[in-house]
Length: 457
Ligand SMILES: [Fe+2]
Image (cartoon, rainbow, N blue to C red; front, side):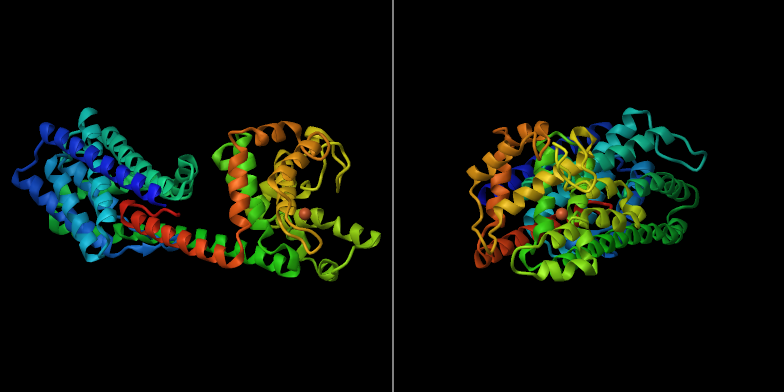
């Protein structure tokens, strides 16, 4: 924890230093202290503060805002040091109003100043001229500046989250960009048009035009609300399945966690890993059917007939999941999660690489959780036993290529760490959860004003 905090501080320091260097380069190119530039910088800074005040809640407690609209408009109208200073002051004021702590505030100031400075430098390097009332020139330079602003901002915010939460940067980057990217692209002409209206009609009218522009906020907000709703519905569904089976509480969540580690070991891409984790979360969704309820509640051994009924859960789960257009890509993974490499599995008795690739990952993660969990009839198995079981089943139940990669010294420890965390006794794990929750809040807060567009943690 102390180590993580120190690394976070170093990173914040590096961002602030980079911001100072970038601002110095902007100052060398253009100060922008003439009356027109100062006026534009001032007007857009005020709108930026307004955008911060209108921040809205996004998934997992973080906040989003659309201050990138006025800030990037300012870059188009007056690309010089005055804009870097006004943006920094606007963010500082917003930080004070929102009473954030010093480290978070410093990070926000640093990353905004760095993003805007880099955007200005790119704009100027590509021959961009301050926008004027005559024509819409420098469009390419502005699009490139806009892209650099988002790139610097997203990388900074994702990196601080990755450092604070010990996650992989690629995964955090994906979470922070994939769903809002389309809105960012739509926003480019809107912001550029807004800057043009400012140049053509002057500050008073541009404030009037800012009102519909703030409608963009609504799009972003709705986008995040839908995403949150999806996530929550998924959690409810998983909780409903597990409520039927008293011995597997939290099983699906743990399988989703382990499958990420297995897939990472096998070198799957970030996007595939996220979809695979959703498939793992839903792998036993078929058990929600009424016919499984008495069997799942039965304390003793299952009869042959009961076992035969239970074996239909993977196919039933696949049918259920297939009813949602959001989960079409997960159907085969769920249907095949009890297939075995040697063909002895079910429901289709597929052999080797005829088994859907994602099913092979889930099968391993599913078994790992079964072995690592204490059951009424036995204790949880040790890492050594789990490891030797995976080795033994490689080529029988499991895909040998995946097993080799998972058992490799560079990936296996991650699995042991995850198992150990999940095996913590209830009271201890509650304490650990609180710590994690606290860290999560800190990161959510950190993130809340640094990212001009909303992101999820
Ligand atoms: Fe299953």
